[in-house]
Every structure is written in C-alpha cells, then in structure tokens.
Image (tube, rainbow, N blue to C red; front, side, top):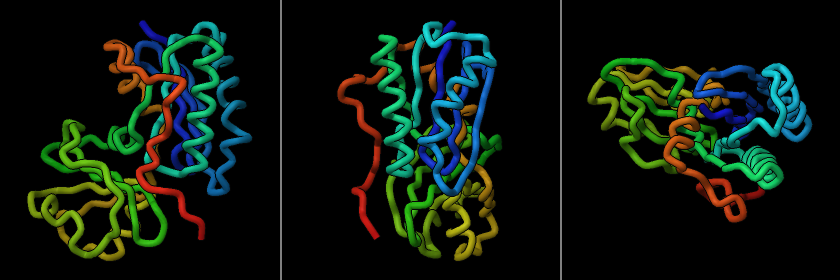
Length: 219
C-alpha cells in the first residue's frame, strides 16, 4: 500500500491530493486564471498532509503531472516534486497531463479527446478510447473545421479541457460533444500513479524535466 502525494499544476487548476493505495484521502485545488500556483502549492501540500494526518516522512512517492501545459505551471509543480523527492529520498512518478484529464470521462464506444489551450487556435491534444487507452500520439496542432474528422466519422467523440471551446466554435459535426469546464485534477492522478508505483515506473529525479511539447515563445 503506497501513500503518494499528487501534484497537478499544468493548467490554471492548482491541485494537490494525498492518495493511499489509489484512494484519495485529502485534496485541495483552486482554479485561478492568474496562475497563483507559486503561492498556493506548498500551502495546499501542508493542508492535505494535515487533513490526512500524515507527515511528509510518511510519503512513499510524489507524483507530478509532466505536461504538456503551462510552462510556468509545469516548472512550479516539477520543481516542488523534485525538491520533496530529493529531501525525502523517495521516488518521483510522472503522469501525462492529457491522460489525467481523460480519466474524468466515462463512456462506451466513444473517443475522448482532451484539448489544452496552447494560444491562438493551437491546442495540445491526444486521443483516447473509452478504456482510456491512448490511440493517437500527443501533439500540438492548429485547429480547423476538419480537425479530428477521422474520429468523428467513427462515432461519439467527447472533447474536454480548456481548449475544447476553440474547437466547438468551428465544429458542426453531430458526433461532437463538448465539456469545456473540465481541468486536469490531482484526484484523477491517483490510480495512474499507483499503477506506476507498483511496477517501479519512476523518473530520474536529477534529470527529469517537464514535457513542454513545444518551445516557449514570448508574445
């Protein structure tokens, strides 16, 4: 049975949870467009530990959402995770942000397509089936009216995340369903992190870097 601290900071949602054997014991999160992660993250860590009646020394691992997502948010989360792992000498586990987001959808015979805003008409995207298995690679892409048409032709396709509204504005396909109000959450990291912990799928703490997917651009 593993006790894992889960950190999700890849979007505007700053989210922290304690999971024991894959079950959430405490969670704190705040979705703030001003990206207050630097002020909130360590406060939330202390609060979930207190609520779960645990000390940092009780942690078996730290899991962090690795991206893609906000450059600033990813750096803050990964830096905190690496610092804790170094200090406590415990493993670091990473989860893909889009996979974390896809966990929120339950459906049969559908495609789940998380879309994260990447400025202008660009999004970070991946495609998952109803069993949450990834069936298309993660990439940054510029949306147009024919985006994802091969999946839409096959049947019900659910678009989620803060980038979904961009596609909703230009997509008229009957099989498209949009849930724009969903954000990656540490609550959905627990099962993924527990599965990786069990098979020792961990990162090299010294060399681990966020998965930015594309280079940082000003302006």
